[in-house]
Image (cartoon, rainbow, N blue to C red; front, side, top):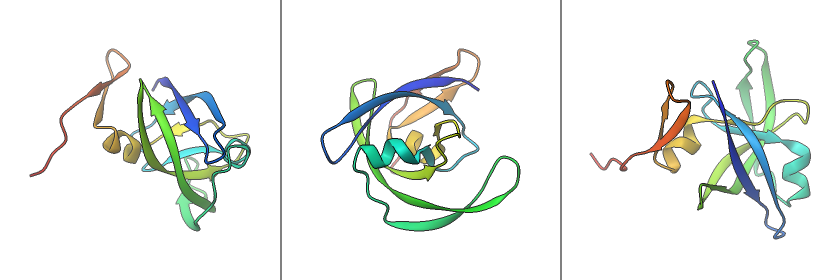
Length: 115
């Protein structure tokens, strides 16, 4: 596992940089609730998620504009605890057309798939 730096841009025009743990076992990107609220990201619904310690929790979800290596995309996000580490999940990797290079601990761009 490794971290990458991302920028989260809010509806209010504010932005914050943070290091997020790349976790292909997580399907969503989970960010601190305080950060998302400061940036004006609005929760859209609540969903159930299984945590790394197998606990089942209900958390709010929404969408945020995320910038990675100069590219910006809207991605689904989970409003996670402020004490939890930021997690970059598989959905964001798919949206950005990225795969994990576990040996070099980096993300590699790939072409999108239409087949």
